[in-house]
Image (cartoon, rainbow, N blue to C red; front, side, top):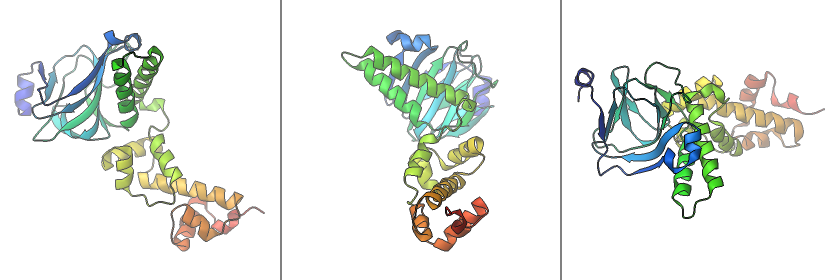
Length: 278
C-alpha cells in the first residue's frame, strides 16, 4: 500500500497471519503488569504479510527490533526498522508497522496505559536502543508465567525488569549509559580486536543505530569509547603495576608500542613513562 493510500484511507488493520509465532503475556495473567500500567507485552517473529495499522490507539506502544527488519510509519513516511531501533508511539496518534518483501522481523513489544506511560513526543518516532535487556526480561516473564507451577516472586521480578527497561527506552535520560553491558564486555577483553562491526554484533544493533546511541549518551563514537576504555586501563596499569610499557600496550589491544604511546599521549597529555609511580 502506498503512503498516500494509507493516509487517505486509514483504517484499523490487525493482520498477523499463520507465519508469525508470538509469545504474549496479558495483564490478566499477572497483577505485576497491571500494577505497572502494562496491558500486554510479547515477542513476535513476523513473517510475510504481517501488518498493523492503528489510527488512534488508546495506549502507548513500544516496538523494539532485535532481528531481521521491517518498516514503520514515521511522519507519513515508511522507515526501515532494524536491530537496535525502537518504534515508540504515543496514544491517539497513528502508528503503523509491517514486514516487507520476504524479510522476517523479530521484535519485542509492549502496550501501556498512557496515564502511567506518557510519551513525550507528539507522534510516532524511531529511537536507537540496546534491545537485549528488554528482550531477555520479556522472554523470562513469558517462560515463568507459562511454567507449571510458576513462581510468583520470579514473575514479579521479570515484570519489574521488563517495565524498568521499557521506561529507559521511552526516557533514555533516566539511565546514564544504556550500553553498559556492551562496554563491560569490551572492558573485559581490551586485548582483543574491536571494530564497529563487532561492537554492533555484540550489542545486537545496526552499526548506525549503535553510533547514534553512543553519540547521544557518551558524546563520542563507539570506537572512541573503546579507546577511552583502553586508555583508562592503561593508566591504571602504568600507575599500579611493574609491567613494561610494551606489555601494557598488548594488554589493552595495541601490538605497536609506538602507536600506543602516541594514543596515550593524545588522551592524557603526557607519555606513558610519566605515569609511573615515583
